[in-house]
Structures are given as structure tokens and as C-alpha cells.
Image (cartoon, rainbow, N blue to C red; front, side, top):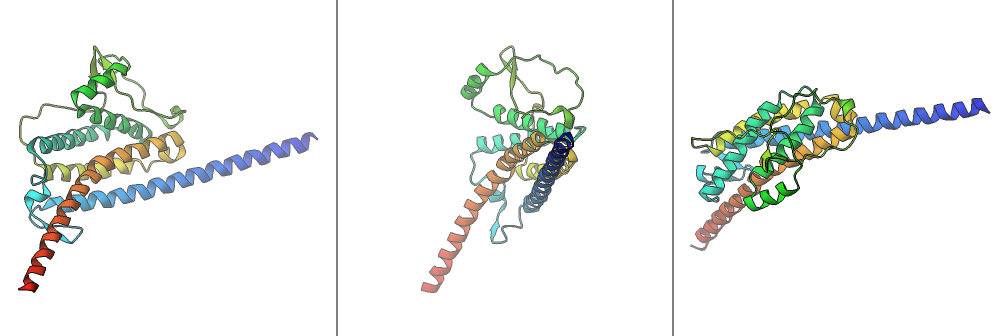
Length: 255
């Protein structure tokens, strides 16, 4: 009877190991595919903005410089805000690259994006979020790097406050006293991000399900800010260009 029980427990143990190994392999494949996809996305966006005078969006619509740097569609204040977002993001990502492992990078990357979102919220919404924000010390105490085994529960990025002011643990916001070039900023960010994503290929992101979820949330935030926003605006501009060109062709045919 005891032998039968021991055999059953051993079988269950092997089944659990097999399922765990399969889950790790699936997460690893998802991360690898995601990193490759983003590398291609960032490479395309970088190439598109490298030369604002000879750029075709999706190899169809030729964009002029004012269209590519969005001065033709964004008001000056909105364009300045976008430039500041990219500048702070690129600067903060450079610091984030010092992370000792992918677990630390994925979790702190989510924290960075949470702080970046908050920084550019309207003042009214900032004040509302600060009401429920937990209190924190002004300066972060040195701590041991986050390891894979240290993450035993879902991680949630939380903005904290000190003396009713937001505490930015990962976001760098130096004073900007000079004009910023949108295209150059986007190119720079697209050069830094592949380095960040390369670190996500380390084992921690696939071996720990909570780190894996943090990596996906970080990617979702980056995609929304760096890829979706400019792509949507450039698609609208390109559609207008094509409509204008087609209207011109129809006009010539009628003549």
C-alpha cells in the first residue's frame, strides 16, 4: 500500500515538473517572438525618421518634414509635450539599463511607465491620484536587487507621495532649457529600446510568471506611447495625401 502511494506521489511530481517546464517554454517563446517583433517595429520607425525629407510611410505615401515631425497636425503645446515625453523616457530607460537582471528591469520598467503617465496628467487628475497614493520617504533606501526567487506574487506599479508631492523613483525629469527635435528624439528612443528588450530574453522573464506578466505590461505601455501614437497620426496624414493624389489623377483624366 505504501509503495503504491509513493509511486502515485512520484507520478504527480513528474506531471507537475512537466507542466511547469511546458509553461516556461511557452512563456519563453512568447517573449522571444515579442522581442523580435519590437526590434522590427523600432527599426522601421527609426529608419522612417532618420531622414525626414525622404521618407515613405508603409512605402506608399511620401511625407514631408513637417508631416513627419507632426508639426502639421499637432499644436505647439502638444508637440512640446510629446517631445518631453520621449526625452524623459529615453533618459530614464538609459538608467534602467543598469538593472542587474530582467526581473528587476521588467518590474521597474512598469514603475517608470506609471510615473511617466502620471507626470503628464492634468493637474486635477494628479491631485486626485495623490489623495490615494501611499506615503513614502523622500529618498529611496538602497536595497538588494530584485531576483527571480524574490517575486512570489503579482507586481503592481504604485506612485507614492512625500509631503503631498509625487515621488519619482524611476522617472528622470531634468529641466529642459533648449528646443527638442521630435524626429531625433524618436530615433534615439528607438535605439535605446532594443537594448532594453534584449534584457527581457533572460531566464527570469520566462521562469517566473509574475515577472513575465510585468514584462508584458511594460511592453503594452511602451507600444502605446512609442508605436501606436505616431503610427496612428502618420496613417491619418498618409490617407489624406493619397486622397489628394487620387483626386488630382481623376481631375487630369476628366481634362
